[in-house]
Image (cartoon, rainbow, N blue to C red):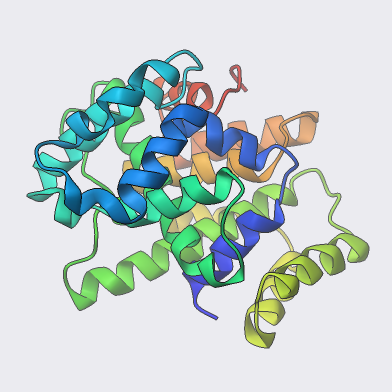
Amino acid sequence: MGLNDLLGAMMQSGMAPSSNQRMQSAMGGRGLLESLSGLFGGQQGQSGGGLGGLLSGAMGSGSGSGGLGGMLGSVLNQAEQAVGGKQNLALGGLGALAGSLLGGGGKSMGGALGGGVMALLGAMAFRALKDSGQEQAQVPLGLAKPQTESEVQELEQRTELVLRAMINAAKSDGQIDQNEVQRLVGKLKDLGADGAGSSWMAAELQKPMETEALLAEANNRPDLGAEIYAASLLAVEVDTPAEKAYLEQLARGLGLPAEVTQRIEQMIGLGSV
C-alpha cells in the first residue's frame, strides 16, 4: 500500500473526531465542496478560463467560516500562474477529497484521497504564507503535480513526513494505548490497508514521540512547516493542555510566525491555539 493510499485511509478512519469537519471548514463548506467534487472530480475539461471562474458560482457559500472558502479560487489562480497552468495542479485529488467529505468514496479511493489531503495542505500553506506577507511563497508539491522523478520522490517524502507528524501529534497527550492502536489499525484494514501498511501504522503508533526528528527533517522550510502544522491540527482535538503545549512547541520548532499559525487555525475553524 502506497503512502497516498495510507494517508487517504487514515483520514477516512478519522484520527480525531473533528478531522472531517475541519477539512470541510478549510475547503469552504458544502456548496463549495459540491462544486469542487463536480468540477475537479472529472468535469474540469469541460470549462475554459481561470480557476477562479470555475468556482465563482460557489464563492458566496463558503466565505464566512474563516476557511479557504471564497478565497480558494484566488489561491488556485495564483498557484496556477506560478506553476504554468492548471494542468500542473493536483485538482483531481481535491475533487476526490471533496466527494469523500460529502459522503462518497470507498476503499478504492484511498490514493486519490491521500493526494487530495496533500493538495489541501499545500493550498492552506500557500495561502497562509502569502497572507503573512511572504510574497515569494512557493506552491508546495502536492498542490503542484510533480514533474520529475526527483519531485515524485520528494512528494513521497513529504507525504510520509505528514503521516508521521499526524501520528506524533496524536501521541502528545499520552493517550494512545494498545486498544487505540488496534482500533486505528482495524479501521485501516477495513478501508483496504494491506499487511505492510497496517504493520507500518502499528509500528509508528507504538514508537516514542519523535518531535525533534520531525523538526530536523522539516529543515526550516516554511511551506513544509506550514503543512506539518496544518496536518497536526487535523490529528488532534486541541482540547487538552498537553496538546496545546505540543502545538506551540511545534510551531516554534518549525519557525512559523504567529500570523501563519493563526491563519491556518482560522481556515480549519479553530480559534487561536
